[in-house]
Amino acid sequence: MATPYVTDETGGKYIASTQRPDGTWRKQRRVKEGYVPQEEVPVYENKYVKFFKSKPELPPGLSPEATVPVTPSRPEGGEPGLSKTAKRNLKRKEKRRQQQEKGEAEALSRTLDKVSLGETAQVPSAPQGSRPAPTAASDQPDSTATTEKAKKIKNLKKKLRQVEELQQRIQAGEISQPSKEQLEKLARRRALEEELEDLELGL
Image (cartoon, rainbow, N blue to C red; front, side):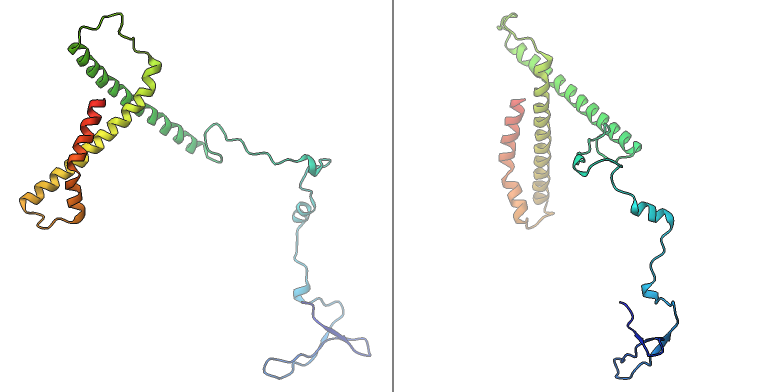
């Protein structure tokens, strides 16, 4: 806010007298020639700041219409803005995950081979030529399905084990009055067993 100056008949400048909130008056003050109040002094900027402020955003000769925002492409490492170490760690994690999946797939294919060998031993009447040869291409989608089934089976076995433990604790007298959730868990036992049987037959 600019300070209000008053000029008297002799040409001297004064800051006009103002009233305080309590009603008293401040006396007017004489201002020397060339004085600039603190709030009106411009902020100092060195030559580099002035240069960068005056510098145009676009290179000389380039029209603003020619600049079209380009979506940044993701670098090879995966996510944008990652350091070398972070990219390396991402690659390691990906490699580990792929190796783990490969190991699981191999274990499942071995179990499938055992199951299929057991079935062929039971039914020897099928002719050799009519048996389809297994292909690597058809093995790939099956392996993901079998991993899913294996996970479900493992989960169901865990639930059944928990139900059995709960039942033993109730019979032993550790739990005198089972809660509603515990009773529901016990009631689901038969359904869990049936689901497990179905999944194991489907493997």
